[in-house]
Image (cartoon, rainbow, N blue to C red; front, top):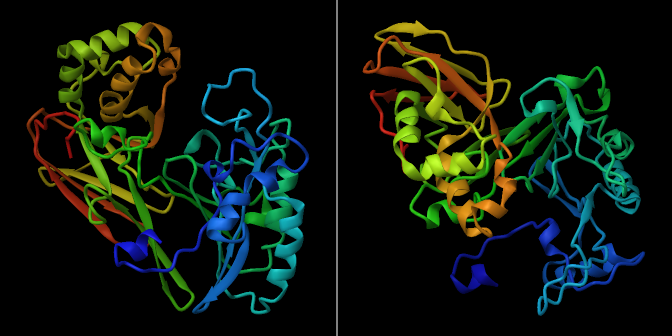
Length: 388
């Protein structure tokens, strides 16, 4: 209706997320189904499939809503439980999915599966071993449910899970752990950050629109040419032609040491990364926010190649000053909000050692499909909430 009202009618294929369930639904054996009643009335079924061109699409609901009773409900919110849930595809859906996929007789047909929560992610969020996000009602790791889902797709050539929920970017290739999970060797999980980033906070308070990993708020665009599928990230602030951000760590260190608000924040949350204590000069940190194992990165200084260190998990300083410092004060005050002592690290960081503080770097990032994204980084480069 909203798209019609603004005269931009376009077809949308929806999937159910955790916020689409009604928290006023009491907890019982039918909570998951009953809590989605309003959603189904507004949007339609919780799971379904369709074909467009040479691709078969399946939309699933992998939120199993529990809404267990809570003793700490706020008055007037019409919420009767914790609004908690598990991540997995129910047996009812799996039975339906088996029948649906049996109708796709050409196993060369690409399959695109939309779900709210990611199916699997790299352990330690960088690469290598896969760990599933599926959980039992006791919230323990349970590969069996993930295996049942993946088993249904094993005969197809290419399967793309398109997921969200985390507000972070992380594309995982099942083939990277085919030894332990042979049934997902044909599968890619595209876990895509949110258009709202960190719930609109960073843009609303004078910064760029960022997500919890410091990557820009945005969306993924998939192009289908017959059976050929390609993808790229588009951000609210920079569009699709920019895919990384380079930090002059000399400037970051100076900002951390000379900004009183940063020092107060770090005094309260001593487990956070203090870039003011950074050792070594003339380092540059490059955040490639949609990085995949198939991407490449190169850096030149005065025409000479600089070695790029292996991928690092690091705290994004721009997100720290754009979100954490502000929210830590608002959310019950600094002294009472120890959750901000948790380090929110970003797995898509790369470090380059430059020879001097004022040299110019030529940075090139190449994506899965051979497209190059280039930036000439003039240094010193100032650091701030709006730094690009």
